[in-house]
Amino acid sequence: MVDGIRDTVRVAVLVSGGGTNLQALINAEKDGRLHPCEIKLVVSSNEGAYALKRAEKEGIKQAVCKDEDELLKILRDEGVDMLVLAGYLRILSGKFIHKFKKPIINIHPSLIPAFCGKGCYGLHVHEKALEYGVKVSGATVHFVNEIPDGGEIILQKAVEVKSDDTPETLQRRIMEEAEWKLLPKACVIVAKEIIKSRKDGREGNL
Ligand code: GRF
Image 1: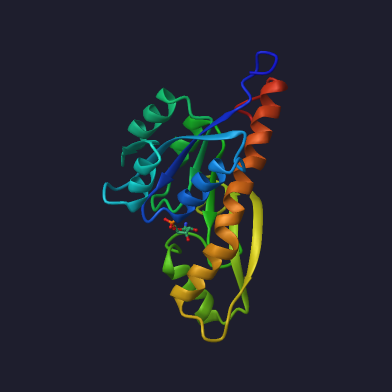
Image 2: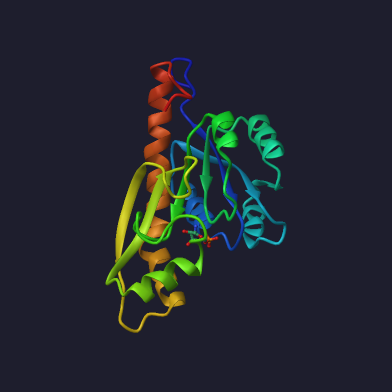
């Protein structure tokens, strides 16, 4: 607390799969690179997600949830200030986004507006990039709104596409060179805005 204003931002990370982006956030928090964010909760859309094991290992609270009303309740109960979608395979409804009212950010493994939108997730993104023949792809962190991958861009990073790339090798390079670096940085940028908005008395209206 500084002058009666909380100077940390409680983050919930939504996952569905392996959770390497979650791991990047955990590592950043351990190294002090995630401040003012604190990872309070990891919520998975499916109980088999390896990301849950990563959270368990770190002693981070976990939940499995498919229902949006239930999700909203969990987030409110935990006092979550910001939501990070890190490989979350469900599309949040406009109703949820409107009710949650706090910043939601997502990481997408391409340079939006290329290779994004409904149905463009996971390896499909990299298959499409290779099919098109682009020489550069990358990752984007953006705010979440009602349009899949359509919200305001926070950070982007380009990554070279090599002539012998497969979707798998391209996916890995984009994760290593862009995603795992961008996501912690974007969280910090948004969290600092949240704290600034508290000081100005406009939290929830970012
Ligand atoms: C990442 O490529 C992310 O950009 C996309 O889904 C993948 C999830 O990977 N949204 P992981 O679960 O973080 O390992």
